[in-house]
Image (cartoon, rainbow, N blue to C red; front, side, top):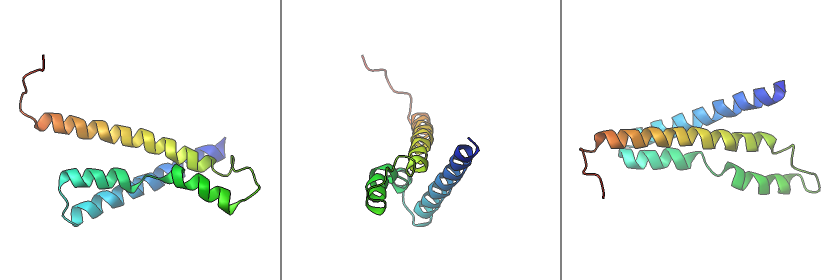
Length: 104
């Protein structure tokens, strides 16, 4: 159990670093806010989709279930963190819009 908690902490730290690097890079390179959001969301993805085939190639003939457990945990943390970021960006966008007439 302790190793699972450690893996979660390490995964969260790695994700935070990647999100921070992509955010700072997008800002330093002068991208507008919309492009920055795209860069942040796309910069940390593809872990599970590319990780499972890589694990199968690196460890042929071995069951990869336990080997990719940290990767699956990272993927879940990504989903939760990026959902929270998306909600935050949506609230900010709504706050910037003028009062709109509700659709009927």
